[in-house]
Image 1 (tube, rainbow, N blue to C red):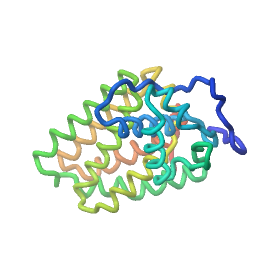
Image 2 (image 1 turned 60 degrees about the vertical axis):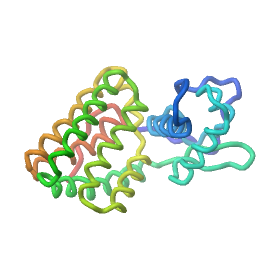
Image 3 (image 1 turned 30 degrees about the vertical axis):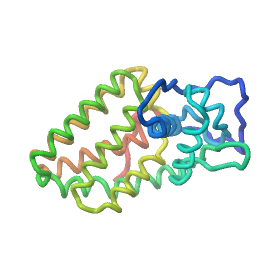
Image 4 (image 1 turned 90 degrees about the vertical axis):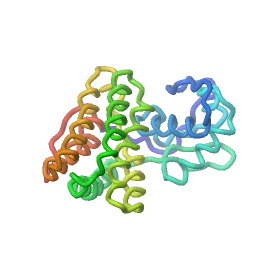
Length: 239
């Protein structure tokens, strides 16, 4: 399990941060937000650590302005806390909180997936399969920012067919607050590819109208968030 440091840790100005240079993007704020979210979820940016906008901007190869804008968005999601005149501190999440987040997701998402099985219009499946393809490609390329972004879009797209916008918002928020500290090592060892391919299985079961199997697959898939993806090792959850 990930150990949580006590107090606030400040990053040295000359320290190299483990985040990728962004280059040129049409929507810079969105790109910075996605990259920061992925860095927080994967643990590349450490919990309890204080980061300044200029430092993060230098790491991304952008100005401090889009970083500040992105951080304010993440603060509203509860991923970071603002520290006046200093920067942003990555919110700490305890193991108990991660367990509780996973339990809530397991209570919400698998049953909903079972209920929409066979009810998604035919024209919706090409879009879901395209996203599933993009998730697998991102996993193979080791692009965790793209992997986590499209993974979130994929699951939100399925839940949207249930017709409850608040539920989609809640599930997406819980997904963003989940920490996946083992996902980097899984990506480097190419073990993330297998989990990525589960998205295609989910689409197949939905299109076949197999509600029970779709629900079970989604339960297994989400359980990775507290097992395989969180620690790099598979664990068995109690029902």
